[in-house]
Length: 127
Image (cartoon, rainbow, N blue to C red):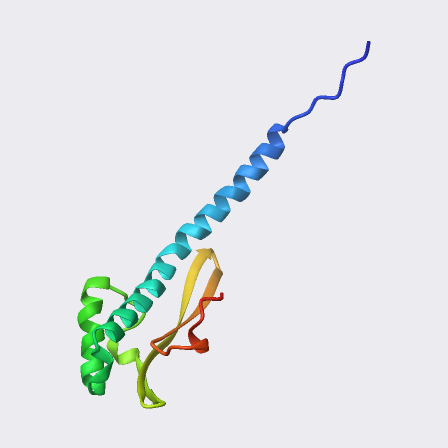
């Protein structure tokens, strides 16, 4: 009676799988703060619209953002970075920014973000 073929994961296969998972976890950990800031900006914009902070003058809008940002501590976008425009009688506050996240040696990931108070199809959650 011959030996049956063994089934299972080899040590080499396990090490390679764990190395890939570790690399993905490290990249995810480096990207997490960038996305936390993005959602912080979106949260501040939503709160500003809800409280009517977008109805004031441009300096007042920038000040309202900076006041909220004192709590959120978003470093990528300040009140000076906001683009404030009028669309259909409504004030729209938006921000576009890029973040370069170093991964290993000379390898980086560049992510472009855009957030706006505009309502409608321009502000959809599809990414």
